Image 1 (cartoon, rainbow, N blue to C red):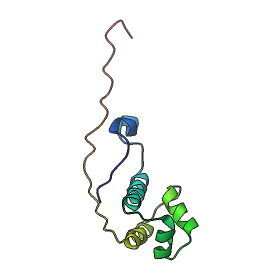
Image 2 (cartoon, helix red, strand yellow):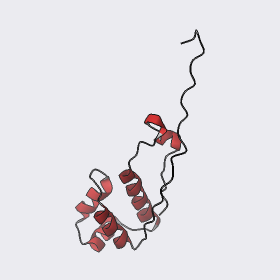
Image 3 (cartoon, rainbow, N blue to C red):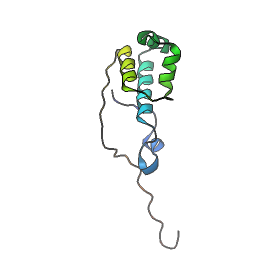
Image 4 (spheres, one colour):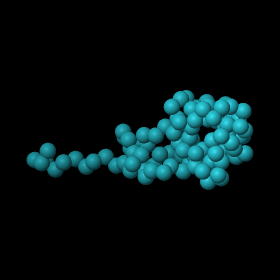
Amino acid sequence: MVFRTRRSNAEAAGHLGYPQSSLTDTVINEVVWYMRENGIQRSHLADKMNVSPGRVSQILSGGENLTLKTLDAVVVALGARLEVQMHPWTDRVPPAPPAPPGLA
C-alpha cells in the first residue's frame, strides 16, 4: 500500500518540517481512499468484519488508537494487501533565513 495523502507537503509540514498528521491518520486516509476507489461502503466493511457499522465509523474516524490487529482485520475484510515502506523524511521545510543585520 502506497500512502496517498491528499495534502501537499507544505500543508502537512509542522514543527521542524515534519508532517503533522500521524501514522494513524495516514493509514485511515489510505483505507478510506481504497474503499472509495473500489466502491466499498462502510456497511459492507462492517458485514465482512462482523462488527456494527458504528464500530467501522469509530475505526475510520481516527479518534482512537488504531491497533495492528484492528488494521489487519480491516485489510483482510477489504480483500486488500498492506505494504509499508519507511523512508527518511527529506521534504523538510527549510528554516527561515536569518534577518539581515539591522533589520531584526
